[in-house]
Image 1 (cartoon, rainbow, N blue to C red):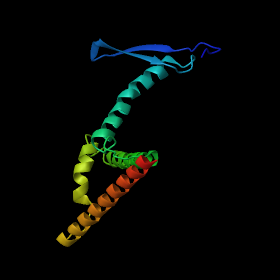
Image 2 (tube, rainbow, N blue to C red; image 1 turned 60 degrees about the horizontal axis):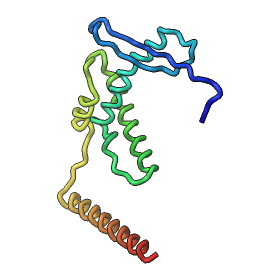
Image 3 (tube, one colour; image 1 turned 180 degrees about the vertical axis):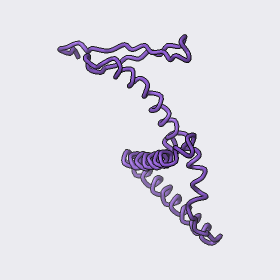
Image 4 (cartoon, rainbow, N blue to C red; image 1 turned 90 degrees about the vertical axis):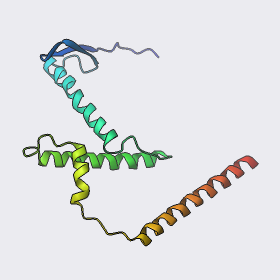
Length: 152
């Protein structure tokens, strides 16, 4: 489909003083009158965005979803983002005393700080049997659905 106007893009090439031989290239679709310092600032923010996504995937389970529908995926993502916000709040709260505190560190310390309920062997077995029953019901439902689809 042809458009009435051509797009205006910024080609931005940056390098850091610590590694002058290494150049970073990016293509920006910001408004044409965007000041150069603003474009450079936005390029610099890319690292922090990538770092946040890496933490979300490796530490908070963003990549570990096992859902079948869009609603469940949105719920999973919402909970993961809340966990990420919690980690950020903790890191900001303790940044003066612990400037290198990471998401992984927060995850490691949390089980020792949150009181846990004592679980008996009977409770663990009851939960196990409950999950097995749910799984068996799910399999029966799936097989029944498959049989109904074959008969159509």
